[in-house]
Length: 344
Image 1 (cartoon, rainbow, N blue to C red):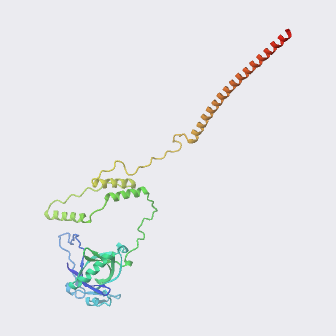
Image 2 (image 1 turned 135 degrees about the vertical axis):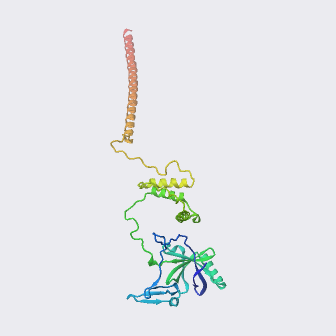
Image 3 (image 1 turned 90 degrees about the vertical axis):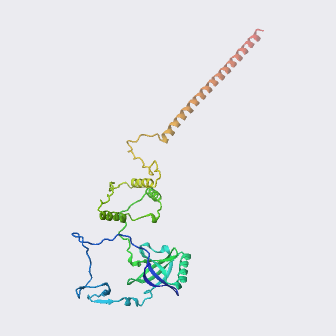
């Protein structure tokens, strides 16, 4: 890979000669500007406004336009001699945990390659130190006319550097979140979690740029004079108003796409609508049941008491009759005895 920057990593008093190469590449399709009437290429030519002629790339340099419109020439040698240590050096200033870096700050990625045999030992030392510490290195470096922040981390057996934006270059998310006061129910969160679990994980290597593939098919068809590929039917679904129903359908569709059997019942059971108090049927309350039970018990107790009283009355009458009979018999016997004595 062709290097875009040569310098050294400054690690305390250790200097590691390195070369910087791009870690990423773009596969997007490039288009040329053409004249639509005849297909001719539209080109931008570089003219010198003083001489009114086209100039070559070798004749083009850098210049800073001052407030009064005058141009101050700046050469590559001027930039190379800047009085800062990061002009040709990636200066490590700190080691921090990786989660301290806000992903919003991350910019382009580069690989840092050891430059020559003498750099192999200190390069390996820095790589292994980063591995063992589970930290990343924060560095400052100068590239393309400006000083930048960088984050060094281990990728495989190499050291990679991510360009970082300065903190004041990241905008605050003011006015981005919804202004309305929205309440999310636990059941909705449960369905969202179920959808996330159903979608699961994915190997990033399996993802592909379908847009680029479709553009390539169109280009190939037009180049060969064939008919263009048919566009897919647009989705006919209207605006979704029921969030719960949308989540349920999403979970079901995700399971079907993975070949899983969808559940027979929906994940959410809706509560029946409440009826008005007038239309609601009367229900027997606990109080009425208790009152009825008390009345029944009271009737049984009264009946039992009446039966006991009746038996008691009957017994009393029988006892009284027996006593009367005995008393009468005694009186009769006494009268007979008295009459016998008088006759004698």
